[in-house]
Structures are given as structure tokens and as C-alpha cells.
Amino acid sequence: MPFISVNGAAIHYASEAPQGAGVCPTVLFMHGAGGTREHWRFQVRHVGPRWGAMSVDLPGHGDSQGDGYRTIPEYRDFVRALLDALGISRAVLVGHSMGGGIAQSFALASPDRLAGLILVGTGARLRVHPDIFATTQRDMAEAGRLISQWAYSRSALPATVAQAALAFARNRGTVLEGDFLACDAFDLMHEIGAIRVPTLVLCGEEDRLTPVKYARFLQQQIPGAALEIIPGAGHLVMLEKPVEVNRALTAFLDTHLGRAV
Image (tube, rainbow, N blue to C red; front, side, top):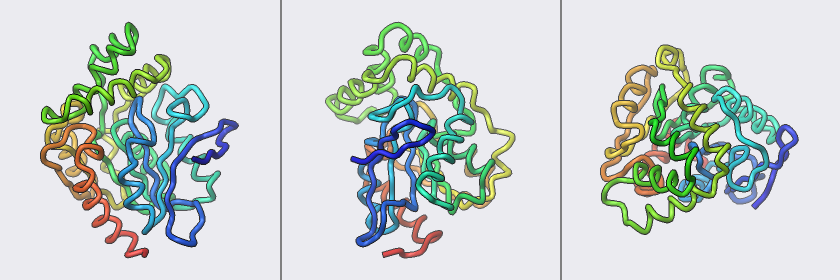
């Protein structure tokens, strides 16, 4: 998979594009705290052949260089630099959890760069449970198990949860702690009403990290926002229910980008 240089660091990404098109995506997918581009593998494959799509390893995550950041505005500025490096003037941003916070911040700071906004399993405020901070500082394997247990619905297969725990535990402790510090300080509850970008809010019905009430608040505060609640899914809704999430993405993109292919 390819890399692109952003702020002097090699940033890793996966992409799909319509036949005969270049690599520049219309839709940019951003993972959450401790995640990687792989969280969006089903969506990039589905969306990319029609509109062009990219999922990125944020700095310090997956195979990207860097140490991550400790504030959402720093991640937001990285995303702007990434779009500049790709030569993209406008895109649809899709953000999960911390990535959703980045997307909200971007929509407020640079609405002219966005054709749409899709917020998945996220909120206008992202407080982090003290147990997550404590386990991250003490034992990354334990942190991976705790986060994964909370990130999936109760009906998820134990093997799926265990695999996710191993993936989270591969994060450097300083990067994961930085992500959680960024989330814990994030609060746009009194600002998101100023977003003026077409918006879709998605949430798993059984999300224990960013519950449905968070999604409802986003939908109520962002003018014209649509809301989709996916039954039988937890926080990692795009991995647990990819068909349902892809259907919602397609409907939104059809409406706001047109039937590209």
C-alpha cells in the first residue's frame, strides 16, 4: 500500500478509485483512538469504485510515521495538510470516534473544503473513562482487552473481540495515551450548531463508548443532519455491520455527490 509525505512524515493509506481515475479520493475515512485504516476496509472497497475513497493511518498509527498528537486541533491541521498534499480542494470526511471529533473540528474551521460530513460512533464531547487511562499507563495488553470489550456489542464473537484486543495492544503507549488525552479535552457541544455542511450521523444501537444519546445530540444540533442507528452493533459499527453501514453511506453520497459511476 502507498505512502504520502505530510509534514515530513511518511503517511500510510489504502485507497480505491473508479476505473481510469487517479488516486485522489472524494471520500476520506479517519479512524478513532488507537485505530488504523483497517477499521474502514469494508467501506473503502464499497465506496471507492464509485466515488474514490481513502482510509489513512493517522500519524503514529498503523504503518505511518510520527508520534501522534495530543489535541484534536493538531489532528485537524494534519488532515488539512494531507488534503493539500493530495491536491484535494473538497472532500467528504468520514470520522469514527476520535476521527469524528477531528471531522467536526475540520467542518467548523474549513467548511469550504468539505462536500459532506459523516460522523460515526462519536460525539460533540468525548470524555474518556478513567479505567482506560489507568490500564493504558499500566499494561497495554490489558488496555487492549478492556477497550475491545467495550467497543463491540455483546453478541460479537469472542474471537473477534480477542483479535481487536491484540490490534489495540500493538499501539505505542504514548500514542494511545495521546489519543485519549485529545479525546478527553475535546468539547464542541456549544459550537456544533454552527456546522453548515451536509451531515450524516451513524451509531450502533449497542454502542457503550459513545452511546446513541451522543448521536441524537449531534443530529439535533447540526442543522439538517440525518441520523441512522444500526441495530445489533457496538462502537465499531462499521466492522460489525458493514452491509448496513455501507447502505447508509451510499444513500448519503448518492444524495450529496450524485451517482458517480
